[in-house]
Image (cartoon, helix red, strand yellow):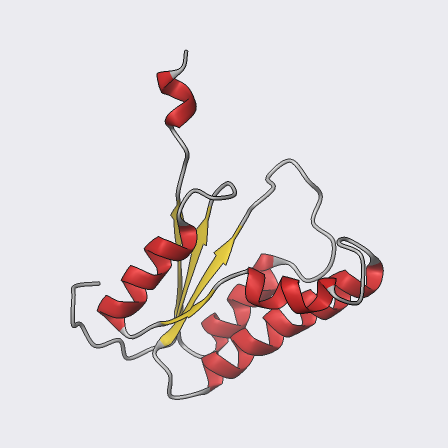
Length: 127
């Protein structure tokens, strides 16, 4: 996607990586250049944490439900798409709504899903 490009189909861009690697910073810059809307993962998590413990069944239902609903609404709208930041715990079994299910909402609307994985290479300098 070039700077100032016009997106015609809904786009879902997942930016995944470890905590504090810069997902929101990179997402903000991409949003500025493409017109995609940035949804930082904490926007769903933090309000729910005021009421339910992280990982509890109610927490998972509420956070996953909001994420899914938001992606579905963006996919069905005139918005160009969504950038979604996510700390992906590849070693954990996923509970709740799968990423594949979220992807289908965009795909069914004629859109495309992209993945951008950020890594923290700082530990390599210490070895």
